Length: 158
Image 1: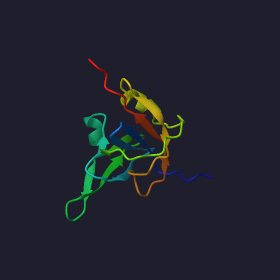
Image 2: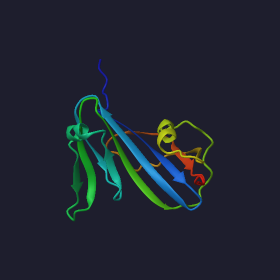
Image 3: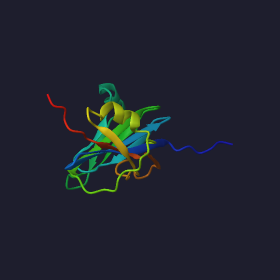
Image 4: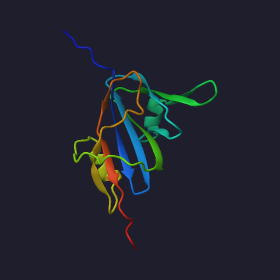
């Protein structure tokens, strides 16, 4: 007997980069599907962006920005081709609030990306928080990955 499979798989997580004064919060959502499936991702602020590897991937996904009647963005629609993958990033930056120290764990699936793309000289992974669902599809079950906290070090002196 066959089992029902979720047509679109989604994983999401957060990377928080902080220094003494500010915090950058990057919310990542990743979607894939075994066969062509329509999907959508909620629009958050003016910084929600689908990321495409090249123009061919852009053409294959055919993204469309759906807006409210007043012109404000509502969500991004796209078709996920068979075995296609898409990443969506929403970034917010603002004053750093006082937070509890992060848990001293290193379990997030985002760690390899953080180590490759986020860490610069003097930075360190301070730990993890539970991720806060931010973007992604409202109708797809999302596997939430732990939020990775990066403490920004002092810029190297030249």
